[in-house]
Length: 107
Length: 116
Image: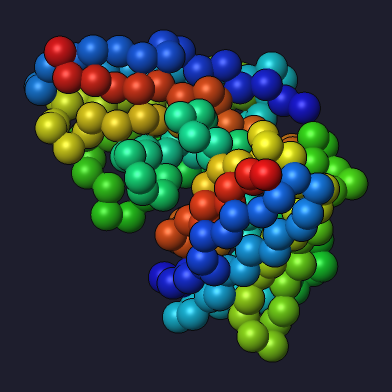
């Protein structure tokens, strides 16, 4: 199975901060990677597909980059509604695999 | 956009089986992949499996192989996930999702509790 190593596991940030989350794959997954946001008690919501494409309706402060084994999710200016847990998901090879998640908390 | 409605919460005994349904409306069913994801209490997301109804393609997590069956009924636009020989550690919220390159729609989640 492809292992997705996500870092950091948690971070504290203030409104307006720039936040970067990284996902590293144990083997290349091309650009077959999505980024998800999950709030407590809710289903995940995809923010980014194909590593760098913004899902329709998602604010432009979210962006993704990378290919192969290194991927990054960036929030350019953190907003109050962005405090949540974020996951990467590779879908290049079955079984698909999630990163372990990054919890973004209010500083 | 596809609307997905899942079956309700269940409490099951260890060793028994559970079948969760995911009914789709408002979009393509057969051509879209459906994935199943679970989340144990306080834990991260775990990919369980997927099905592409039109192609009959089914994949599942190796940790669940032998216990999981993923199916789809094109006549009712419903996907199913059945898990057998339930263990305490199968307690989780199970989500279905219809996901393509550009679309991503999720059900509301189904809590399965395994308890004696």
